[in-house]
Length: 270
Image (cartoon, rainbow, N blue to C red; front, side, top):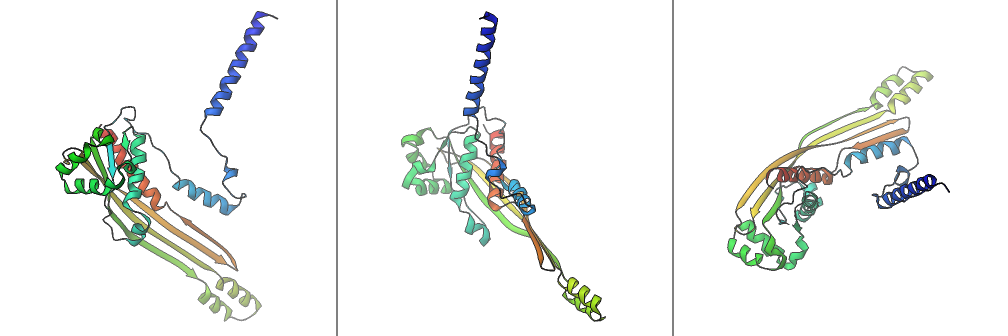
């Protein structure tokens, strides 16, 4: 066999093996058919709404540089809004923060490694007690900790709400008063019309604090807010109805706020 032909065959085989290897190690992806219902107008609308709320990773500018080892302690939720406090606790927010700080290349000691000491550890830094803090930092993995970080929710309030609608019942009855079959049909058709639109705007504010692990003194802090709009629309005509609900969820808003604050920490304090 011609040596050039042999080299060509070997080269093609090597390329095929590399392609197979890359495919085997590629991040798994699933097509739309694995997660959506049969193609319908409602399926498309609900998937579009879900796409707006799905988690979207961001690129941290200094992720190539390792940050100081840190611990995230549960922050405070200074809100009386029942909807938020029933859904979220300080530990939920700290979990999100650990994920994003790890992606930004901060060595994060998981709070679960503190075990029953977590409450005592958190109290020491909330009260700014350096003696207790130093005593704890002498134990195990805590020795390398440089920062203690916490994320507080300072604001969750609905700042605006609007509602409008149309009920065709009254107009339909007026049309029906003119008499005749046409008027009766028209009155029935108009009387069946119902529309309803509602919308509300929320503002959620988050503060972060960075504390020196040894002295409990504050190294830095920052605050950011995000606006969340939630709305519904519904229409009914002659028994045919449609309804839509849109807007991102509280989970998504909290994740985005944490991403913004971690981006600031990564940009300013490494």
